[in-house]
Length: 390
Image (tube, rainbow, N blue to C red; front, top):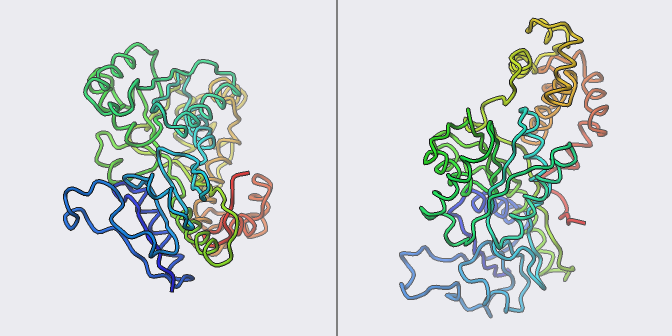
């Protein structure tokens, strides 16, 4: 039986989800004796690092955000590491968030809500924060939007200080509104919400705010509740444990394990459309209320006072998309969520969304995604081979 040291910061939901995924693999596939760090009240007060255990007695390590990672990096043992401060760890398998895709997803989300003014709030000295900004700004630029306001604190260690909130509030007050703000993670997004209060800016009416990690306690406790991007940390934890097992048993090469974005969980902080045209807003509200049924473009037109041609023209003007693509996008995203988050049969999903039959459902999904429902579920399964970012 192999001895495995697990050091994972569980103060945030991402760490708890990561540990849940690792536990799933260990319970099903591994014969490990797991050693975890004792809670703080059982540790001697003078111990300030993770050097509390004799590293010579272990066969491998699974580490996420250790207090002091330097001693761990120096140990010549198989290890899989995810560290907020060091994105790519030399000579070790590393878990890395797909930050460019996270930024792209945020940009597409705000574009769909009709925003014209965009801002980003991140941290200095953290490569993943810069990459999320780049993914956000590059996606906007590809849609013809060159101006993305960027606030980065001068001192990352002061990112939650009162002085930083005040400086951010002054910065936000100068930007044209309505404004959407993409924050690099939920911690930063909460600071944005606090800065908005200082500046007396209403969320979401004047400023919409989106975070990353979907820490549900943090998101729901913040007033207003915070919209956030869910990352697949549970699957990453499973793959990390699986890969560590391979490192120990068959001496495979080290690799990078991706943590992709899953979906955006919308809450009060983005519950608004930044579109001046009331008819387009009425159409969007109707679509969001009705898309689970097989609605047609004519149904959407009836929810407004416009002709079909005029409504299509305004959709193109304000959203740069068609009515049909808006309906299809919402239906496909819902289908994807149900395929990935459950094992329910496809015919149940087809029935609930009122497709005429399974052939219609499969053809609809494949025409839009390029994969059949079965192929999509298999390619995104949580129990499968470790994948690397190419």
